[in-house]
Amino acid sequence: MSTGVTVQLEMAGGHSSVSIDLYNSVTTMDDLVQERVSRLQAYEHDTTFIIANIGTLYSQLSKWKELMPRVKPFYALKCNNDPVVTKVLADIGLGFDCASQSEIEQILQLGVHPSRIVFANPNKHMSHLRFAAQNNVDLMTFDDICEVLKIKQSFPNARLLLRIKTRRHFRARHTFNKKFGCDPCLVRSLLIQCKQLSVNVVGFSFHIGSLPEENSYFTTTIADVSDLFQIGEELGFRMTILDIGGGFPGVDTEKQSFQKVAKEINEALERHFPTSRGVDVIAEPGRYFVTSCYTLAVQVMSKKVVAESFEANDQNVKMNEHTIVNEHIIVNEHSHQNGHIYQNGCAPDNKLTLDSQSEHTNGDSHIITNGHTSANGHIQVNRHTSANGHAILSNLDTVEKHRFQNGLSHENGRIERPDHETAYVYMYFINDGLFGTFSNVRTDQLVARPSFLKDCDTKAMHTSILWGPTCAESDCVMKECLLPELRVGQWLFFQNMGAYSVTQACGFNGIEPPLKFYVCDQKTWDLISHEIDLAASQG
Ligand code: PLP
Image 1 (tube, rainbow, N blue to C red):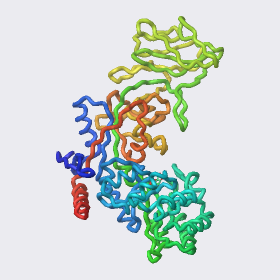
Image 2 (cartoon, protein in one colour):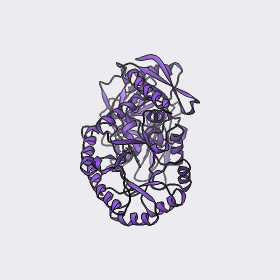
Image 3 (cartoon, protein in one colour):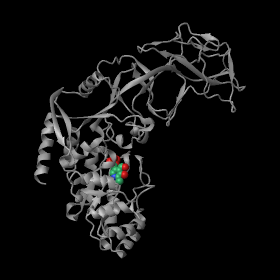
Image 4 (cartoon, rainbow, N blue to C red):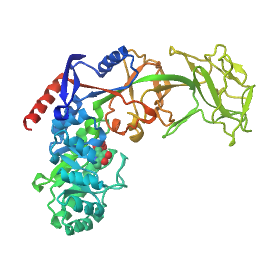
């Protein structure tokens, strides 16, 4: 549990401070989430929140220093630009990979020396280049003569890293070869042009891809780039920096661990860049540092139960579309609102009969939305009415197999449904989604894995779908998955949500971003605060 001690972290310029709650070594994430849920419920909040555990930043750096001491990390700010996270990373000594003027500004405002920044965007705005020049952020990447000409004009003394393409067969969730990098076979001619323009090329950079499939990509590329260093040296450049980019795992899996990656990189460096070669090695890790820092807690806002008749594909989930039964009726999506059931569908003859009162058609033989409710609030589906308005069952003579859509969740979260062979899908709507903190589910094809607080009964699992809060059907956090039955208001949490989550959120539909609570275990905080004091004393 929390120790009850809250410390203040002074932010840039000493103008403001942020509270960090300290906890002791036996505290679990469940405890931390539960504590904050209780606090919030006292105020009847139904917002989402993030628990940012800044102790993980320190432990990731310790692991890095222990396992790959030769490589100096420049954290890729694009991955998560949380001001507290970046402040702590700066205080414990990291360098930064910035992609734009505003990212550079954020880091300079922390008091970080410009030599601890690499401007690692091969295509820079001219004004951002001028800003870099004014602030002496002189280490930067390029991959084409066009960029060299811009740099020559606005920052002729800059130190340049030539970014190369990696091998074509490399597979990763995010590859960069189409957009970035000079083909290795063009390196010589580009370097000759650089020589003619008298710009200062000091080394090479590459990125094997984010979430790569193989660790060996680092080894292969380090070997490839070693030959390119020779070309640069032959042309008279003093090549002193190798930037091995990002692509380090944020959490270890069976297949990939940071330990294995580090071992392979160390060996490749030893072979191709022994220290006697005089090359400093830097990297641009993003997700490695921040993935485990964030835990996101969300609440179930709404719930409904539908018959299991959906197809899931990679992009989105289509519910009950085109369930053609006996060529007469197509029973499609349904949803309920305010206790009313809306039922959609189409029939092959362009007609959909919902009840005895009306007929609906549309031009292209598919009816998209229709809905009927009887006056007393009970639902009529093809002249069948449910007994109490809580559950409905159609039983059409024309339909051979029992494929109907049913289900209505009560306010208390219990489900009543007919005793029927049809399997059901539990649909939950939570208050954060793919346009918010779960944006990494969209871009990383991340499979979100929820954890539940202790009060959740996890014995029986049901086929479920977790939808985000916006109006977009693509806002699906978990496609077909197994979850315990959840109730409206229930909290669940997702760990390892620190990478490419908040920085990519766009606030679509006006959904508020999560609150943030910063925490740290007491022992790690002592170590971090020691580093902060040290950094302050060194100015
Ligand atoms: N460096 C550059 C230039 C990048 O584009 C990225 C990610 O897009 C990174 C570093 C960070 O990569 P990762 O988060 O996989 O470590």
